Image (cartoon, rainbow, N blue to C red; front, side):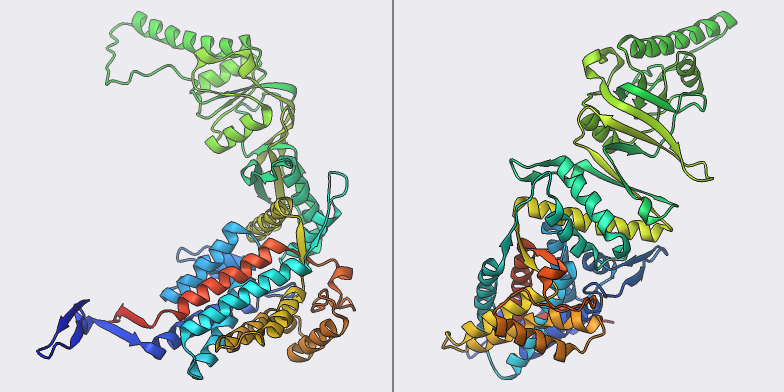
Length: 535
């Protein structure tokens, strides 16, 4: 794009390769952008809440994903439009920061865009709408602080954490055993949490899945599960009080770095070479035995000769264990990863109370359990399920539950779910709108209306009459001045979310409103779209 002037000094813009580009300006650009954002939100709207539907997505190479998680749906969708990509980014940032609420944030952004479109048609300037939205989001976030409840939990009383996790899991495919999964998630997070620093490292929680069994068989293992078995079928399948040597060096004779050639012209020379190799193996195995190791875990493979020697010397071994798993094993057992045999020493060995190999079903699948470790700060959640898709979806659901628990350890405030927080904020925002004399007043009211889109979508997905249900709950909230009334999605018979134990994290809700407002502001400020035209 270049700026030029005609003979009268009037400026005009020259676009490079103008015939190959299409250009949208002014209101047309805004309307196109808004409709793209709304289209993405419409897709996710039906998968909001406990009665939300799942989406089935097929990748170009034929992999099928069935999911209810907003961030995953948008990641897998191949979106071309730039504004739609912004919505994908919005969902992803909510996922990275909070981990939960990825669907709601996109639905809210879509509703804000829809309201903005009506205000634009009335002739209100987009910047004024954006400013009004900014004011309204500030009011809503402050009001959330006011209606939030703090709760105390400790090692003995985990119920509040479990209830909040159950709310997260209730909208997923795993909701029939949400209680047990919520307990597993909470115990896993508390096992690796540093409660003094209020810090949780989720990398220490390994989530493994194996097809077969049923969801109820999912278990939490205070230790590590590795999808490997002993290198020799006759090695012992169970080792108690194991001392583990964790090696990243291969069980094989050293190879020179340079190119080399060995000429062997007599049988004696070959015998010497063979004996030399055997001595190498002997020394390696003996070194491991000398430091007192009762189990060797190696990152690389070893050939049959080494395997045979290990077997003869009664030293069980596991080979081809990945780098990440090695690190987790080292953290869990308190061992050190040893890069050279010369550096092996007794203090570098990891300690585990029990190492056992477990076989599954009639298949040859075996896994190695390393339990009762010296340092139980690395844990594994081991998921069972009927097929691969269910296991993948359970992993995603558990990730959300783990993130929610982490957020609650960081900040103990909760708000009530079921759309009650949004309705309460909507009432507060509408009440505050009258205090602003400018055109922003319209935008603030529109923000209040847009907040109601979430409880409306919840009611719609639950098969209730959306407008009637919403207005009844809103009237009830205003009448009793009680922000705990929400949509009764599960048909329990009460609208009080406190009785239903439907909780959500405060920071998650606040983040939703702030992120949605920022993205909508950004979309409203675009008034000129220059894009390569389609051939």
